[in-house]
Image 1 (cartoon, chains in turn blue, brown):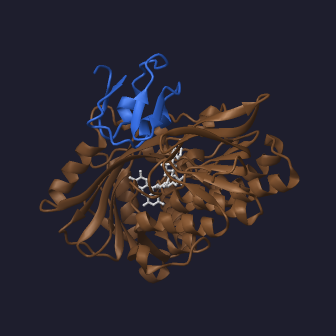
Image 2: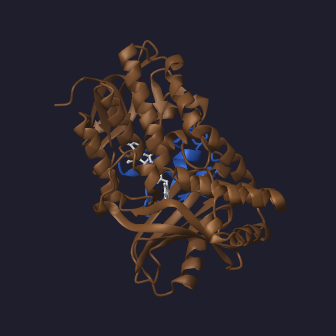
Image 3: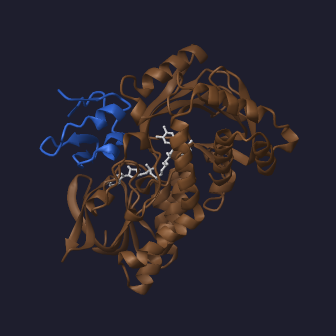
Length: 56
Length: 396
Ligand SMILES: Cc1cc2nc3c(=O)[nH]c(=O)nc-3n(C[C@H](O)[C@H](O)[C@H](O)COP(=O)(O)OP(=O)(O)OC[C@H]3O[C@@H](n4cnc5c(N)ncnc54)[C@H](O)[C@@H]3O)c2cc1C
């Protein structure tokens, strides 16, 4: 999954539903580790800013 | 100078973290608190509603962080039909950007050391035992040793995951939220408004929490399971366009609310969670400020006892979970079950709930009256929900 950094509000909601701990809030940016991500799409569904998608 | 060792490291300086840190220090522990942001309390991802009863044990009420005093809750059903719930004890709408800093100052006054722009990045293990925290401070990688880590790192908590806990939320147990602080509007600063209905806010509600007679936090939380095709912002924009077409937004914020409950698993050797990180939130209302402070107190006290006893294993720390269950946890599990039913509630049932509350004369409004009447008519579901709303008002 990919984050549109322009839309992301760094609220961390996505992190709370990630089943494989692939998402990290690093200082002022949310980062998805696509080596760990299983593309389940949960993060995208709960993102209140609609900043996450399965392509860049 | 930051010392190389503290008895307790608290990660996150929200209400849960700052109260945990304060109580741990009051119990004699040396405490370091790490906060990722440049200032605690900012950005405010919160509607800022609390009860006076709930916060009074932790802080003296001060006008500098009180935006409005609330006497009623107005519940509005899907058709616009509404009922008032009189609060047992007044409510407040806070200025959390000030409130959260005050809570930190109270911790610091007890000897807690706070670092801002300090982002925890992992736990350190020695022979398999958690013995410290890795973090960046002002962008520089560093670390600190400790015996206990309290993860008070909010809904996005990763401390639990580092410690091997499964804290991932199911989509039904996470509300996705958007909120505007609207100005230039006409609101009654004496009541908070809650709007229900599957069209307006599926699996959640829209709130209007006044900050003055011309401004309010207007937001929405919808259940993650119901957010597939339409996100919370689309629902909120529809609502605001209708209700406050001329409003200006002075602030926009996104966020998530865990609507789960605290599990045994959130206590491990050397590591405990508190606040949103431990899902210590009222699963029906989404209120977590007071819940987090209570969880923080119990976590901090337990950490201090552990330091005194020199015992940091799960067996010892589980007393925290037992105390939590007694204080709020058992109640939280009831609310959680109610929430599951709430998720499936039809608009007709919401209307019934509003109508039922309306039948109660104001001077008779009490829990026992509500109970008696409910038993008479046996609207079990309505009762459960009504009860949980009032209980949450009392406990918040
Ligand atoms: C839109 C919305 C409206 C709400 N309205 C209300 C309401 O009206 N009333 C109510 O009672 N509750 C409300 N809540 C819930 C309430 O905001 C939370 O329950 C409360 O803030 C939880 O406190 P906390 O201390 O656990 O976490 P937080 O307040 O989230 O604090 C966690 C802190 O940890 C820090 N942190 C996270 N990770 C790290 C790390 N790795 N290193 C260092 N620091 C870290 C964060 O920066 C943050 O400051 C609302 C929530 C939302 C999203």
